[in-house]
Length: 634
View 1 (tube, rainbow, N blue to C red):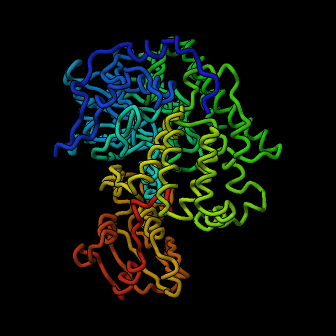
View 2 (cartoon, rainbow, N blue to C red):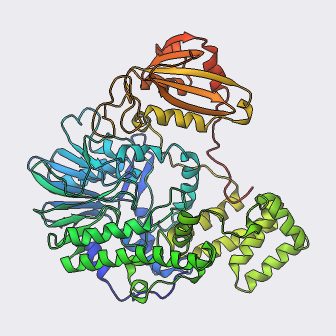
View 3 (spheres, rainbow, N blue to C red):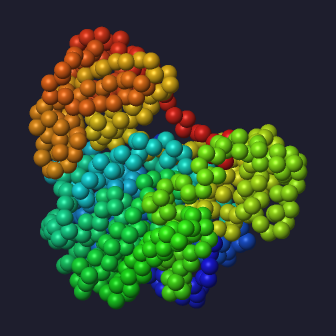
């Protein structure tokens, strides 16, 4: 899984990671108001020791780099706080105050980062905020730098489409993504040489308070230039790369280029293991190539939202060019092998990186991996089915497992054979065979114990941090059962950023279809405030009364009909309904959120016309997802 390693004698990354150091947070621990620890970077002090047998040396090296914590000068007037969350917070000094780029995940860590900057550079006010893209670790901590009541007059810049993508990712498949994220990031594992040692992109995710201040300035095109607090910024839109809404940007007067999360010191994910929409590695490579040409000659340093900067124009060009080639090669060679008839699993075993990329530390698979990224490219183009009819209608996991175990001669014989594969240095197939035993017989403690050991062995040997965390969390579940999580991406500000159609979609996803098969009802919502979050529609204009906004959001005065039929809840805007609904509710978005939270129309002051019992009928079909479903056991 690791291939040929680059030279450990090359200390360039360590030199760059330490360059410009001004001071650290001591101790490197951040607490919430109630005393709960939401970030502990000091827990990774063991990484300064020699790499033990319980970790891959390359991943240990990456952990040492990512665990460096403190305030660093990137160039005159630009500073980064690193090691206080999985992401970096960058601070640019303006005429009156500072512009904050990517205020981490949690308000607590962001506030600590800003305080560290002020300790060394003075108590400058926040005069601007920039979100590089739509992932939570780049906006969630904004209330730590813009507390409630301080945002007035402070521009918040983000790429076009930011708000929709920032909130939708955490809604439609949010429960499953959050559950799997706990395994991906190693939540619940001990921070130790035989436990969680990082995630490759950083050390861990903070667990504090998440918020969202909606953008006030949309970046809609490459070449757009904005001046914030006297600082000139030139933008490059890069949609569909590492995030659906993302952008690079240049500070021409500082000769500094921000690369968002499009180019970091590792191979990134084409499809993250927590689950997401498959990213387009072809367009990712295209925008990196565009950045090389578009910004050429105008910077002396490149920095990103994770990891450490790269200094020297030619060095940045070389870095960007290799990152471009990395994603282009994965894409094109997967398609070449795909068109030769190979399946995703086969391609993952066949594909190798070119020697020049194999020897580059920043192309190593610490967060993404060549194996699961090539499978993701295959999935993007051909989906889950590999064309083999034997795989078209297989039994689900438990039924399939029972038959495998029966063919193997029963659970005792299957475990015995699995042990032989372990001793024969084939933990991959041992894991497959033992997984079948566990799914066929969840009470088989010997199989669970042996499988946990196999997962542990695979985790210790993994260069990829997220693979390691999944293996070790899997071993933990087998030994201890399902354990709780501390990851929570929900908060009122995120909910208020959802459009009304998105709120209804989230309700539709929760309907127990089979129980609702025989019902047939219609409810109209007459909206009094459109989106209800004070923002404009997707084209930068306010939605006209009685019409839908350009991005499909609801405008003030719009009538939106909800229809439950055949177990499916659908909705559409109606200018003049042909038939009356059984119930009409006149309300704003905040009131709709209240209804979805279980409060009554009368309590919320919602206007009611018709049969209010229909609302109770509709809500009677709503289910609540299991936030702690098992992952490696049935």
